[in-house]
Each structure stands twice: as C-alpha cells, then as structure tokens.
Image (cartoon, rainbow, N blue to C red; front, side, top):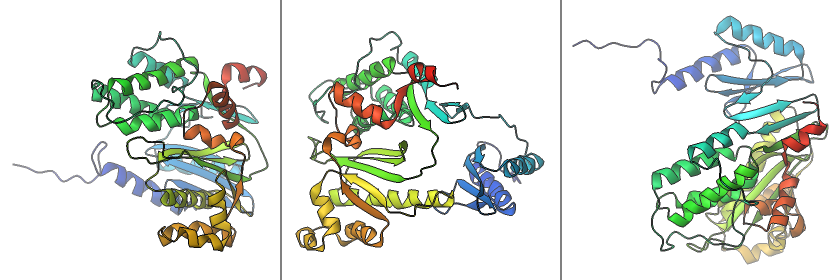
Length: 372
C-alpha cells in the first residue's frame, strides 16, 4: 500500500481554506496592508493622511474600494503578478447580492435569489400579501398541529435567513420561524410560506444607499416584552446607521435582558473600531436611541444601580461606556422607533412606515428618478 503526502492543500480539502488564508494574508502584510483587529477578513492600506484602500476577503473572492486611483492600480498590479486573478470591474453581483451603482447612489437587492426561491418551493404563481406575518399572532413550539416536513422547513427558513442580508423587512419573521427548526408544525410551515408570498410582491425591493460626507454613527434599539409564549423571553432588535444608511442589523431572542444590553454595546464598540480603521473615526459618542426610560436612567444615574444589584456585574459595563464617552443613550419616541420592526409583527401602515425609514425601497419606482 502506498500513501501520498500532499505538499499543497488541494481545493475542497479541510485544510485548504486555512492554507489559502495564510498564503494571501502573508501577501497582504508584505505589501503594506494591515489586518483589521476586529474583523480578520478586512485589510486596509493607507498612504499619506487621507488616501486609503480597503479590501474585503471572502475565500478566493475579493472586494476592494478606495479613494486613491494610484493605490487601486498598484493593488491590481501586485495581485495579478502573484495570483491568477480576473478583474470583473465595477461590482454588479456578489454572493447572491445584486448591486446597481451610479456616482452618488448604490442599490442592493436579491431579486434573482427571491425568484429562484419562489420557483424552488413552487410559489411562483402565489398571491402576494402586504406583510410577512399576521399581526399580533403568537406561535409556540407545541401548537397541537400535525408536524411538517422538517427538512423542507429547514431548507426554506435557511434560505430566508440568507435573504436578510438585504431584506430587512423579513428579519423579525425569519428570526421567529428559525426557533421552530427542531420540530416544525404545519402552522409554522404556513407562516414561512406567507413570508414567500410577501416576497412575491416585493421581489424588486432592496436597500438604497446615498452618498454622504456626514459619517455620524448611531444605533436604534428596542425589545418586546416577554413575547415568547414558550419561555417568556423577549426579542431584541437593533439597527446601526451611518447617517441615514443602514449598515448593521439584528433580531434575536434574548438570553437575558442584561446580557442583551451588553451584547449590543459590544457590537457598538466593534463597529466603531472597524470604522476607525477605515478612516471614519467617530470622535463623538455613538448615540443609542432607546424608548425604555428605566434602561436610560440606570446607565446615567448611579442611584438606580441599587435597584439592579441582582444583575451580574459584567452586565453593568454599558454604564462604563457612557462614562468614558464611547456611547450616549437618548430617549426616542416609541412611534418613531424603527427597531420596532425587528421585534414584533406590525400593522400594515406602521410596517410600511418603518420599512421606508430603513431605506428599503422598490427599485422599479426609485430607479426611474436616478440614472444608474
């Protein structure tokens, strides 16, 4: 019997991704790039006080951008000299994301992915609905209904989760449905098919980003009150915006109220560091808009600490961030709290109002007024 020893990591072997990452990481570092400490797949190269080149690595696919033509041309040269690479030009499609660009605006959607999904689950000719979920309807693990095919259900919900990269309006619905992966019922499957029916009528919707010189960073945060009828846990939703553009979002069931607050604070600091490495330094404190007066009082007034002694000490570090000036918490009118869309099902009027505030628009309408 003969055994072969591989001198190179062949594609599709377990060690291949690690070997490739080590190889290209050495190449980037050698050519003056700095790996981002908070995001290891993000590399930044600077020249002078203002010129910057940003490279994002996903396996063997690269996205790069910058404000220096010289740095961009130099980057192309060193990459072609070292690797067999193809420059596809201005990005129009990446990992299922469709990108339409002009000088001052960018539109991101997943229309082709949505249409493929509708065909896959035989919903291409379904009747569309106006919202992804029925308003005020509660779902539970044991609803007494017949079990659905769990493989089909998992496949569908997993596909919907990937859609939340651009379809923020289905984030809450998809997050809720993912809690029933283990043992879905026909009711859960029907709710998932309703999301597809909503997507049928909004397949041309996506995120619209406009050019800006104002890089003010803020966060909207909200949670429902013991929304789960199975374990009485709440759902937290948050949205990070750079000026009026959404850059990060989440909807998840809370492990605990205090832990949820500290996790969101950690996310704030993480994004501040990434923005700093990209030369978008946040000199002012990041404003967190919250409609919970008790939470605000506990972070600003040490007297309220006595009413929260039962909470683990490590969860109080959000107050330390307020004191050091990294974040500031302000009250925001509940009627304007856009993160409400990530915590519960809403009426059609309120749903559309918050969807518009997220920057989710119909390209068929918006694109008519902009030359892409």
